[in-house]
Length: 149
Image 1 (tube, rainbow, N blue to C red):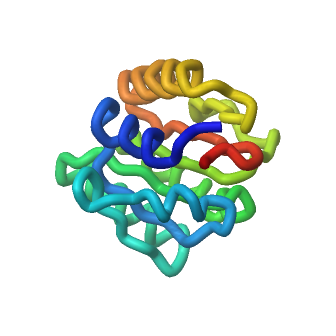
Image 2: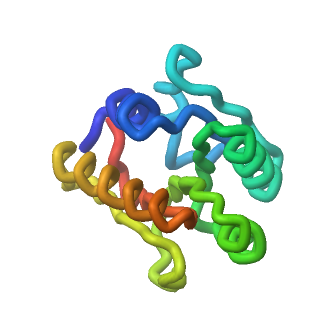
């Protein structure tokens, strides 16, 4: 299990993600409760496509961004990822609560499970972030189970 505040701090301070958007997902409550305007900015969205637009716009403005989404709604923005992010080379990050093994291999991904230790999680996050920023494609962090404390 990983402390939600440490996870967010790593994303914001080490990987330099500053802008977050998404639709509330019950499985991510601990993450939401540990968000702080001291090191990040979160804009709630009414649907996943709006969150996608906000995070993409932030990237165009020079700010790395992240979408927080439930896996049930991931496919609602898959078209936008293919038609926009991949074409315009926008390396946004998606934090997806839940997991669906049907995800296409066009996007780098890492799966975090409740029994993963924080050191291995942070190494995986650094590695995947380096990869998708270099390739200028979106990347996904799947949160499988209750990961945050």
